[in-house]
Length: 258
Length: 258
Image (tube, rainbow over all chains, first blue to last red; front, side):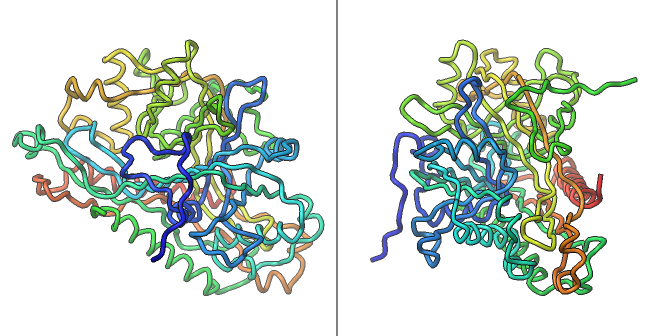
């Protein structure tokens, strides 16, 4: 019998509202992180400031120690991009790592019901919490840079000018978040109305109910002014086609009750 | 001469990295919030927990006091949806409001350059910081519920069963965030490579560079099993068409240098 790995339920990550939608399954949570183009990363406020910091960053799940680990195994979250020097300085100054929360949400559909209060989204969302440390070893940095680049476009890394030179290695900072807890929430299906509305003809004959599927779609790639590769490479072409197809399928599958 | 209103620059909201991309313009920032389907809302960690809380929520800019205020005027941020009771309880328990940070990010394109380190996204992102209070008056609550519903689908509110009944009014909680600071970042244009790579033929002849436009797209609306309105109403049909067109245009316009 195979048992999926789950994140431990602690006070701060236990899904309370609509808890039937909650998941602690590593594979499900990691997959939401890996298919979301921008993560939102939050860390505690500075001493003189009441507001938590929040930044959009690019991130991906991976394991430098066990590179062959699959998505449903314990993994770290590697973060890069739009990184204020502040988060990196704070991480360097925290002997136990900087406590960060990482959130990813994908909307799969607008769920339109008879009354505004039961409107909803179909969505997949995940939150990870853990301690962020700056990656120091060049080997691990290159491992993470490659994962992140290939998350944006599959096989991109090996089709660019690599490896990074010394200046690029020094100017790039990667944060490795060791995960303490995680949780996810997935909503699928059509609208759920209450009997009090469903049995009133003057409402049901007037209000359209259903789902508008939502997906993130890639347009036709546009070469830069200086591009000299005349034909769009096959790895980009198929990545665009396959990602679009899988995004559309996910949004359509979400319309059906799980 | 018309001068656009800007958020004050304070330590916590001043854009440091690539600061030419930064904006403090109210209209630009509010428009990013209003066109993003899910906002990520962060609030300070509980005393026994090092990690800031982060939640996906639906939100919209508005002013109950000056409902005719336009998007470039001072506005509050109304939040609803996927609201843990914790954030609402904390807000009720904070005499000065709960300090929250609200983030919105839209990706408009994948920017592919010669070397992984200069890869980027075209994007629009905004962060607001302010104090959240639970809305108590029924009048303001209905104002906010209407704004939020019509943000999801324009004109939806008036085409559903409204007004909410007593049970619905009691079970719905809306958070009004009074904004203290805000900032935005917008990246547009093609890839920027360095001369050291651009002048090497063996690189430029091998690596495709350009932009893959990205946009959030609505699919064909799918009626629910219990829907009795045979024809898709015109307000939904035109909302889907117009939103798709404007998302595609935004992602294509972002390819050009500003």
